[in-house]
Image 1: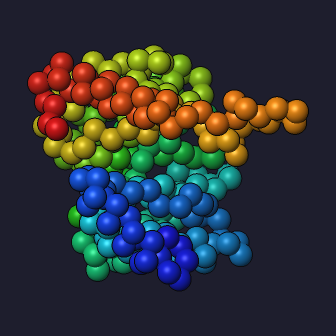
Image 2: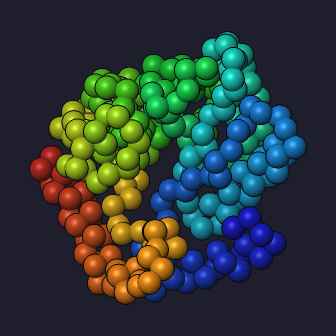
Image 3: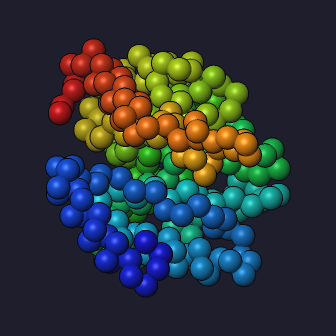
Length: 256
């Protein structure tokens, strides 16, 4: 999506989506260091703007763009620098009428930085920037790492919450497991969503499907098991879908 022929690739994705009868509902911008002004900063901003444009082209209304941080920076300076960072992107997002979503970080991050990692701080940042296109994506797994009450966090975010990253872990590392494989309090999460009348998508950010061959260790003498057949991968995806359907059905809010 970052090359000169990105629209050709986007058109291929749109054709595939039409053929498979699904639509794109959320995007994530490239990861980077928004508040580190080095030789890569200008390219990072350009790539982020391209991701906003490409998302709009694909019909996506919400794109996650992580807030920035820098070593030794105070809370006040972090907020001030993020205001400048997001204002530039929001001005660009206005052209496409697309929401930019800031997301909660997690406690695994270094102590030398000020992180926007709780419902309180992310709400404070959104209110500080005060733009109608700046909203929130709540990452349930990150919240679990922080040992935050999911229902209280979500209730605090209220109408600013328009998207989710549903993933699980054991409270020690950002594992991105499917629900029920970790310690995420799913009932607390669901009560929070129902309390605020959440109308967005129940989006998974869980990576429990088998890794591709190029990401796995290889045995020089024999690699007959390096690739898992596609049928198994499809079963993993179906289980993830069925788990989501089960959760939502239990609370009478499943929509196909």
